[in-house]
Structures are given as C-alpha cells and as structure tokens.
Length: 94
Image (tube, rainbow, N blue to C red):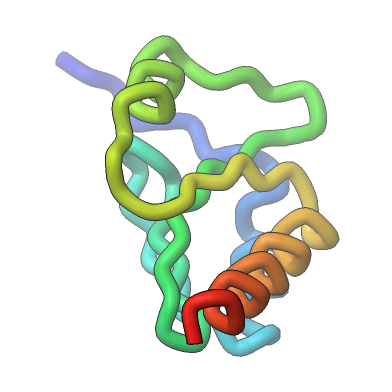
C-alpha cells in the first residue's frame, strides 16, 4: 500500500504567493505537486525545499515528459520568476 506523499515545508507559502500573484494553482501530488495556470499558460510545478531532491519517479517523468514546461520551485522568488517566464513565453508566441 502506498503511503501519502510528504508535503514540502515551503509548499503552503509558495502556493499562497502564486495565488496572490494571480495564478490558479491546483495541487495534484503526482507526478508533480501542482498545475499552475497563469495568463493563458500552464506550468507543471514540483515544490522542493532548498536541499530537496527529486524522487526516481519524478526524475523519470521530467526526462520523458513531452508537454509544456515543468519547474522545480524551491522558494517564493523562484515561483514568481517562473510566472514571469510564462509571461515572457506568451509574448514570444504573439
């Protein structure tokens, strides 16, 4: 039987900051922690503490994923930087 996944200590703070910035965050747990929608773009997010490491499943998923961007988010500044990256990506496609 699979145990519940451990939630990274910084997740609540990061999610709150993303939502305050206008992002829609849906926590999914596997294969990554969250789906993040922002200004018409989607980003898969894996939350980790500063020293947290990816599981084997996550490493395999990141390697094999053929969809849009996946980001490992370690803190609030990193999360907000990821949102800015989505804004820049939108401008490139217009």
